[in-house]
Every structure is written in structure tokens, then in C-alpha cells.
Length: 210
Image (cartoon, rainbow, N blue to C red; front, side, top):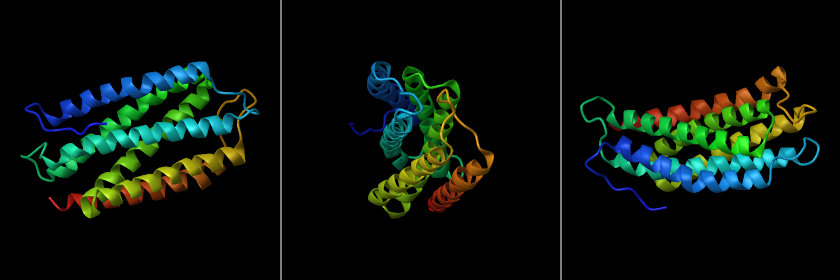
């Protein structure tokens, strides 16, 4: 992937344009693969398929967030206070949108049960924003290398929480999302809360450098 350079247009235009380009470059091949190799039955490798799919989606999304973050060296909203923080929130929002579109297309192509498509979408959007936030904040505070490390570790931890939940609870007989409120709270929501607090804290800390 090539780097971005500032242009006379607003950086958000570059972010959205890049998002469309990457969706075509990444989304079309992934959708084609999912059409040829759809999700298996719940007792025939669905867990592994689902987790591999989620991981690929999140690394593609993380790469998009990292690429668009290069534009943050130039003020997007110079007339407002905390311009960098406002710009970063815009990158995070674009990242979540990118993740959602990529997930919707590939999950439908994989022919998941509708409820499982919804779980994949919720998981993707949730992971996308916390990873983007901790990367942006970490990169500004301690450098791009540290930001990449923090984002990667958090991404892996979030996918792991979904893996643990699905391992404990399993799927419905039709391969759908089996909801267990107690396990969801104990495994997933508790992990999400820790991830959100860490990401927001680091992002806000970086925002104070304005």
C-alpha cells in the first residue's frame, strides 16, 4: 500500500476515497473466496472458519486505519480546539464504516446464518474502533511502532474473547449465534469494557498534546 500525501481537498475526501479503493481491492477477492468456500456446518469447522474470517477482516481494517492516520500530521480542523483529537475521531469513524461494509459483504457471501452475520458485524465494528483508537493514541504518544504493537495486541485479545465465548457456548443447530447472557457479560462485555477504557484513555492522553 502506498502512503498518502496531502492534497488541496479536505483530508476526509482522501480518507473516503482510499476506503472505497481498499474495499474494492480487498473486499472483492475476499467475497469471491467466501462464495467459493462458504462457511461449513456448526459441527464441521464453523468456529475456525468464523474466527479466521474475523481476524482477516480486522487486520485489513487495521491496515486501513494505519494508512489513513498518515494524514493526521496536518490539521484537519485548525479553527477548533483539540484539532488532532477531532481528526482522529473522524479516522476512527471511517475505520468503523470500512469494517462494517467489508464484513457485511463477506459474511453474506460466506452464507452464515443471519444471526451469525449479525454477531460478525457487531464484533468487527467493536474491534475496529478500539484498535484504531489505541493505535492512533499510541502512535502519537510513543511512536508508530508502539502504536502498531498496541493495536495488534488489542486486536488479538478482542478476537480471543469471541473465541472463548463461542468455544464455551457453541452455535445453534442451524449454525446461528447462540446467545447466553451470563457468558456474554462475563467473557465478551467485560473484555470490551477493558479494551474501551484502555483505548479511550490513550487516545485522550494523546489529544492533550494539542
